[in-house]
Length: 160
Image (cartoon, rainbow, N blue to C red):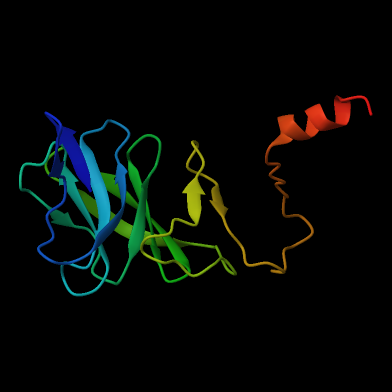
């Protein structure tokens, strides 16, 4: 993870030979959350932006894929195929409240460098990727994604 200063990239995260991925800026742009193996297993860390050298480890269990809520008061992260939400304070350093597990049964197991979920702006709903053929309840809403819709419409509108 680099930023460009005077046309030379500078590293935002220094992990000394370890891996770092899945970074996310806080909504106010003052904090960077990321997943790293700097303790030996994947964990979620937060540091100020621009970097000051301060770093806060937020999870002690193996976890990845940090995502900020739109108001910056909560941080979501993944542990295998389980999603957690915790209150976060950034007024004097960073502190994370107790984590609450969210019901995302049947979602894809997470990989540290693949983000398979997102948080809606209201912070109350998640978008998760389910494996093909996963069973859903009859009340579950369905989202259909159409790619290249305008091209398809142009082809259909063209006289033959």
